[in-house]
Length: 291
Image (tube, rainbow, N blue to C red; front, side, top):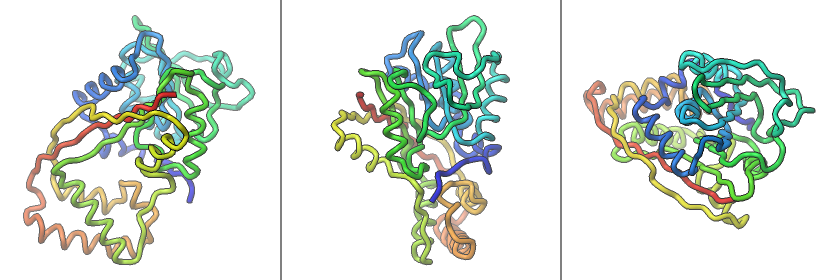
C-alpha cells in the first residue's frame, strides 16, 4: 500500500479537519511552549498540509519549514499564507546552509513584514528529507505516521535532521463523549463484518511510540489543550459517505456502498433526529521525544 496523498480533498481539508481560529491559536501556543521556542528556533513540520498548525506557530516569530508530498495541499497553504499577510521571497533551493543543494526540490519561501517569522514550504517525501543532518531544533508531526508506507524510514529521517538536544513533538487529537467517534467506530465495525478492511499504510500512535522506546528515546505524553465543539450526526455521516476520511479510501466500492447503507440505518435508529446538535470534547495531545 502506497503512502497517502491528500491531493483529492485538498479543497475540503480545512472544512473537514481544520481548527477554529481560537483553538488554532491555543494549539500553537501549546506547541510553542513545549518546544521552548525562541525567536530563532528552527521548526520542521512533516506533513504540513494546508498549514492549520504551521501558520499559527510561524506567526509567533520562529523559522518554520513545512514539507508535504501533496502539491495541492501546499498550493492551498500558499494561498492562505498570502491571504494572511505573508510575502513571498524568491530564492533558489540550496541557498540556505541546511539544504542539500544537489537535490532538485520545489520550494516556496515567505516572510512576514515587521517580524522575525519565516516560512519555507517544500515539496518532499518525508522518507527522504532534502536537509542535512542535525539542522532543526524541533520537528512537529501531527496525524502523519499512519499515512506513510515505510513509516520506520520516515521516523529515522525525522531523528536524523533533529539537532542533538532537540525534540520531536508528535501530536494528535482524541475525543471524549464524541458522536463523531461513535459513528466512525460503528462504520469500521460494519466494514469488518462485511469482510473489508480500513487499515492505513503506516503505523498507529502506540506503535510509533513503541519504536522510540525500543530505540532508547525518552518520550513524555501530555494533554495540551481541551475544547468543546458542536457536531451534527448527519454531517459526520455525509463525511464518511463522501469518503472524506482517509480510512475510507482503501475500502472496496461494493463493500463501501453496503457499509454506508447499514451505517445510515443504524444512525437513524440510534440517534433518531440526525440533525440534532451534540457537544463533544476534543483533546490535543503532544508526545515529546527527546533526541
